[in-house]
Image 1: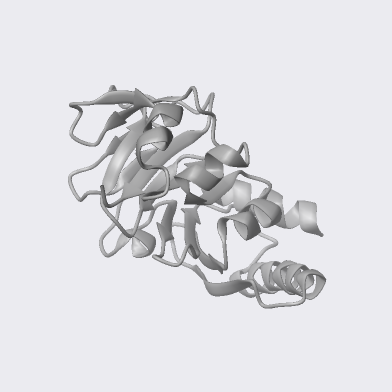
Image 2: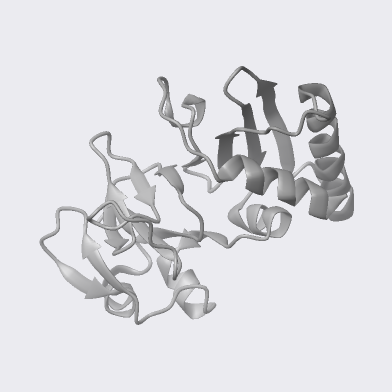
Length: 206
């Protein structure tokens, strides 16, 4: 059951569309990080398996979520939306933390303080990052030595659009900032998809 759900989510995530509205209401794969570290993830894509209808898909995903929550003793994941239109299926799932996203989807999603990420080994200190305005270049380790307790970090390993709750301070080379101030994860400065290493977004107040 779990492998089937992950496969369906993967199928949804291989297509991206452009639409109107906020990040997770657009026809695209997106993620919103709250100021408390909660994750809201939206997937939108074609799903051409005729033997699946929206109600069946919704029930199977809900069953997988219920199984996860029962195992962890709390409602850590919730299905916010599962709908189908002429273009495809739109899913919105909320997660109590990045760890829950990782455990449920099998994709790294770390959300927390920069200093904690470095000390726990979740963040690679040697990763090179650039300030959001492009004026400064440093490494995760060097930045942590200066202001690790002040800043937060998101580490993610899949292509999507990300909105973070505070100002973006630094990004790795496989992340770009769009005109709306959101991060295009898994894309380099030439618009090419780059996912051979985790994507880093450092945010907060300096």
